[in-house]
Image (cartoon, rainbow, N blue to C red):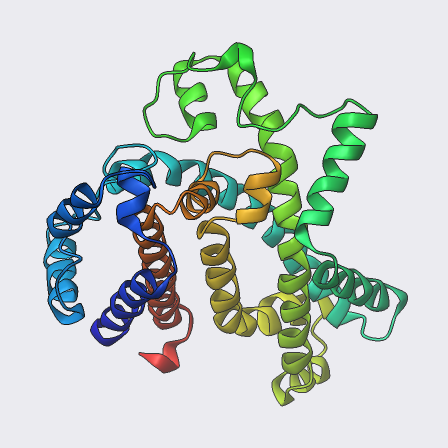
Length: 323
């Protein structure tokens, strides 16, 4: 873990230094006098050697300082704390939908290998991997918002409900429920449905395919043959025996899929104007806001490392052989 985190910090730092974007010009502007540019460069420590800059960067990280955003003039930590809950809310709903749909589909396809159901699930998985998420998002807006008028427009909430719900957790649906503002809750859920559905559809393909592969391997095991010889029902063999053994590798699949969603689904958040970490990272990059870009990238890496650690911990709970 320490080696992984150090490598993450080092690569993040080097990317920020080799990118053809000058953070000084992003702060002072292209028309600033040269003496102003040099003064700001010295204040930021960019006139020092790379090793010195890296040591200074490590010292700032040790204090929880990710710098100040040029785009918002806020501390990057404050911006991330403001934008991350929206991504967390979107990713959590998406992974729940994807799990509730993808896992049963994968199990059913494996239990009926070669049937029309199995073939249909495989086609859905291939289509889900092949169809770009931005195409699915634009098609969803076109059909459900523009043509049918069944869904609200982009954004996290309607104009009428803007800033009407007291922020407690940063999760709009939770805050609306805690405030007892049911119209605001319905509006938040309506705006959440489309982007969460698009991300869930994209994740279902991967989860269903992996679940099917894990289940096929277990259903061909000797203990399943023995269970059938004992006269156990097929449902009990599938869910009580085979599925329990697929839970261990499936945990890794779900954890990393969730981490991928939490990193900020950049295209989905951009299409649906969802004010999350992905949109913040994209806007920061377009504005040459390197402190924000590096800070958000570092948070994304930490999320992946944390979920890998969580998957390893769950291994010990689900598989006694690893204890």
